[in-house]
Image 1 (tube, rainbow, N blue to C red):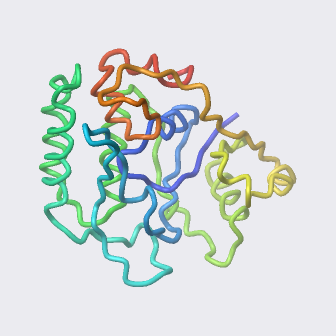
Image 2 (spheres, one colour):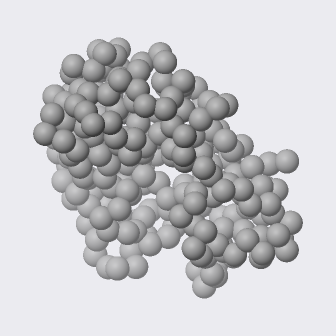
Length: 231
């Protein structure tokens, strides 16, 4: 049995994103769909002494139907600004020094022009820290028909990947046709993001929904203890 998940690329995603990657044999970055403004595609949250702060990569959006894979960066110095914010706010985290050099190099040498490539670069680096070896691919590889419905496109990707099980985030329950999946002999499983343990986090109150960098810098070698079983 082969499990896959299909999800838009996110910028330095939260821990649940990586749990989903780890639970499948193949993870598809759904990048040939419409780019959504004010979403997780180009931004995420960090903890600061003044509260939650958004880190946003400025991008061009020339038209509403613009695809994620075609979205370009609008500020070549975004990486310097983001690293400055991260290093200033996490310098007191217990394990920040252990990862400082790695992430500093990752940020300061990030010269990709497209958002998708930036997200991919960071996701792969974080996978390496977590020991996740799941194969990552882009949905644009499959040349899907643009006129298909949402469920049909996802099921076609499953078929291209020879997958029997499709794991989806709970947000898709509002539009995904599970009956159609069953007719195509694809079993659907819904990701459960509940039950995460709290950890020693800077600047209370505790917040689960921040970038996984927060978990890495605060827990270091113990990071896997705060992820879902199986990581």
